[in-house]
Image (tube, rainbow over the protein chains, first blue to last red):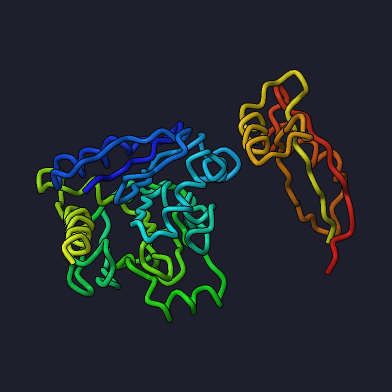
Length: 225
Length: 83
């Protein structure tokens, strides 16, 4: 299985993701520059956290017009798994692969701490190794993670089981404590917490590892069908 | 209530990297007729009706907080707030 980690100017969790794949699940992974225009041959796309383009204009707004974006949209249509973490989540909402947006945290503070999440949907390629409503300890590090969408979008998210992760307590003002959502088809996931920073007990938690294992396993299941 | 609309912009001589990044994205979208982008800030201040000397107070707020006079200039409009 081959992963791509997209690197924008200002991405800063790209190497964490790279090593999460390389050492966490021993899969093939390549860093892909934002100026590239092909994602041919990749089985999963990872969009890292950070501050692409210094969060100019809005978080993710400028990255949304980088050359690689058209290709990300193309492979999203081909059901390739796409995982956006933190700034990656913000970019996925800006390019319209996920509904809603991420606003400034309600309390106007940057939050950098381990938080508890509940797995609200374990029927996705990203979460199949978790149990339903399993509680995970995963760090967050964001100033703009307050998920917002209008009422009808929220109804759609609930109806289609697109709310994948919820915070156990509302840390930033997100509607319905949303920490991560998927698209309707389930192959695009955006989340604010950083599973790539929770791969080993020695850093406080290894609860993030199963996400990468889930993606790998889902891929193997598909290939072996 | 009285509404004061404040616009803060970079002085012409100041480089605006954010505006430059936006310009590049605009050009990437194909809108090459747009030759330059400068980004500014916009504020709405709601002022109590019985306020005296609005201009002096607004200027003080702008000079000391909303704008940095070294690099930014500002202008404002005073109007009746629509209910």
